[in-house]
Structures are given as structure tokens and as C-alpha cells.
Image (cartoon, rainbow, N blue to C red; front, top):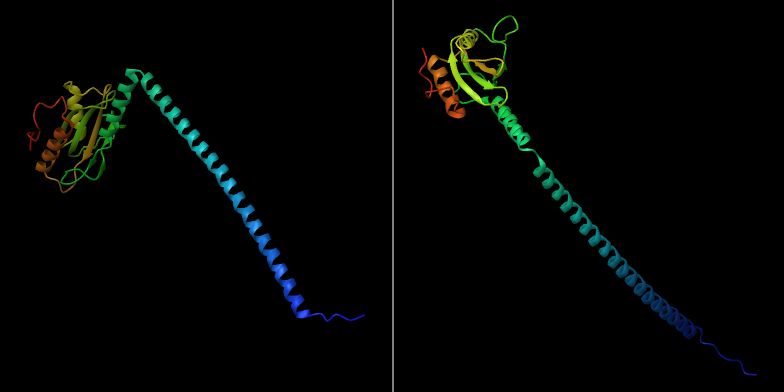
Amino acid sequence: MQSRTVNWQSCKGQRECTRELRHSVYVRRRNRIVNLTFYQLRKVVGVQIMGFWDMAGKIGKGALNIAVDVAKELPAAAMKQSVRQAEHLKSNSDFTCGASALGSGRMSETDQIKGPDSPLPKEPGVYRHVNKSTGEVEYVGQTNDLRVRQQQHAKNGKLDTEKQLVQYGKAKSTASKDDLCQTEIDHIARHKPSGNTTKGGNGRR
């Protein structure tokens, strides 16, 4: 019996080729499965995302319609009251600035014009009479004595503390009478009060 000579190097090369071929086939199959899986997943997720945005759009549209319906149902009186309150807040939040004779900040307000509880100072300044219900500025003036002047207005019927507030600002120490008159003119031009028959600035100096 003749012995067969085995070429171990050749066999080893064949085994490696077979193993590499099998590995290549496996890799191709695996990549195909992975790609298909990702494609299906992306398709499903995309559909879900589109469905989510469709639902969100419907919810937003519904909420907007509800808000419009509620606004339509608001009584006219309530709307007018809201406007009056807004105008009052706007009037009360006016800031003095520029060449104003008043100090910086909001004007103070009160309906106590006499007695120990009155915060009105006996100092020069500019004042406004504001309707408590509507917030409308009904009169603007300037004076050398804020407290005394409001008591005079109440006495002659130009001020009713049951219906009106007094908003006032003290003059700066450096302000002249002309500065006070000019600030009065500015406030009258801004608010157009019904109680002022002139453009202002024509008071006693």
C-alpha cells in the first residue's frame, strides 16, 4: 500500500479560503437582515411620529376654537370693565422722565386729603384727579402746596374723594415754577382730561 503525500500547506490554504467564504456569506446575510430591520423600524417610527404631530395639531386647533368661543361669550360689560382697569393701570404707572419737574418714579395716590392719615405733603408738585371706576384722568394741575390745593378743590366741588383719587408727585428741589407749569402742560397733553379747559401752564407763579 502506497502512502499518500499530503500537501499540508495547500490544505491549510483551502480551509482558510472556505472559512473566509463562509464568513463573507454570513456578513452579507447579517447586514441584509440589519438593514431590513432598520428600514422597517424607521418606517414604523416615522408613521408614529406623523401620527403624533397630526394629533397635536388637532388638539391645538381644538384649544384655539375653545378660546375663541369663550371670548365670544364674554359679556360686553366685562370687556368694558377690563378696558377701564387697563386704562387705570396705565395711568397709574406713568413714569416721570426727561425735563419733568417731578422726581423719578411713579406718582403716589390717595383719597385722604386731610387729617393725620393724609400722605399729601405741603410742598409744590403736580397732581391729577383720577376716576376710581374708569381710571380716567379727569383733571391735572400744579401747585405750591399739594395738600391745601386738594382741600380747596374738594371745597369748591372740583374733587370728590368718594369717586376720585388724587395722584401726585412732589417737585424736585431744583424745579422752578416754570418747570412745574411745563410738566402740567405735558400731563394735560398726554391725558386730555375733561376737567381742564386750557392747555395748562397758566396758573399763578
